[in-house]
Length: 121
Image (cartoon, rainbow, N blue to C red; front, side, top):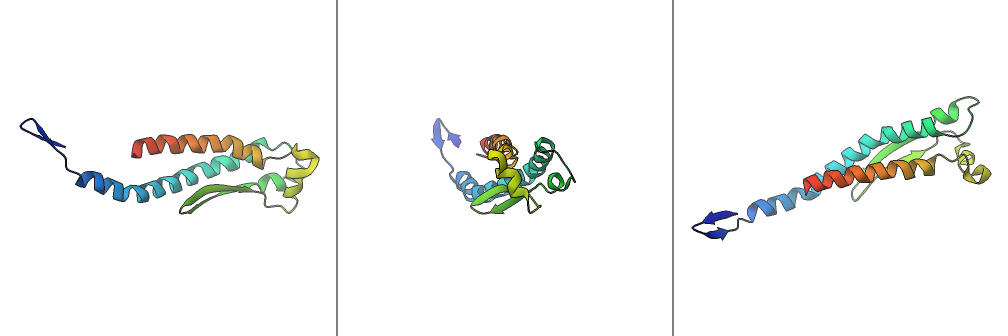
C-alpha cells in the first residue's frame, strides 16, 4: 500500500506472492511440527504406560512415526510387539497407552499448529 498525495494505491503483487507460497510454507511447517512432536509422543508412551514390565520389550517397543503426505499430516503411535494389541484392549482398556497418548499429545500438537499458523498468516 502506497500513499500518494492523500490517496492510497494498493499493490496487490505482494499479497498474491504470499498467497502463492502459502501452501508450500504450510506444508513445510506441518512436516516440521510432526517431526518435532513425534519423539515427545514416544517418550510420553514409554513413561506413562501402566503395565508392569516383565521383559521391557513392550515398553521399548512403543514408538511414534511422523507422516507427511499432503494433504494429510500426523503422527502414528503403535506397538512393535505382537501382543501390544492385548495391552490396549484387555481389561476394558485399563492398560491402554495409545489413546491416552493421542489425547495428551494431540492437544500440544494442535497448540503448536495454531501458534505457528497465526505467525505465518
